[in-house]
Length: 149
Image (cartoon, rainbow, N blue to C red; front, side, top):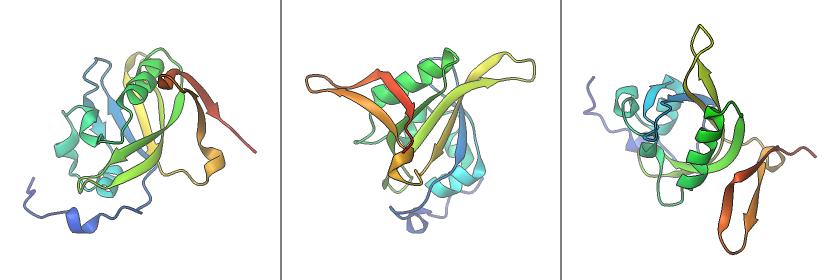
């Protein structure tokens, strides 16, 4: 695929993302096995730039990597987990997103990875509440589901 054109001018920091789906591997590298084209377009990547890379390609300085990996690990244990996360597009713009992780099953019902859905929250009440501890910060293992008003 020709990547000679620059997508940097097409991406803006206030863009609405998703919902878009990324399938990542079960191993600690969390390798992107598949990413949908709409999500690639929203983030300014070509799919072949992301596939085969660690999901860390979407991380940046404000990404809570331990929270992201904890959500993926919990999904690998058949627990669906929505969390607030900051991820980055190709141009380096940050996006505050809701990331929902769930098991990715093949046609025989065998878990093949983790299904990660990313989307811009519609309003603050849809954000999951995350417990914090003043001494150690965010506790990834203490994630509550969406809260409603």
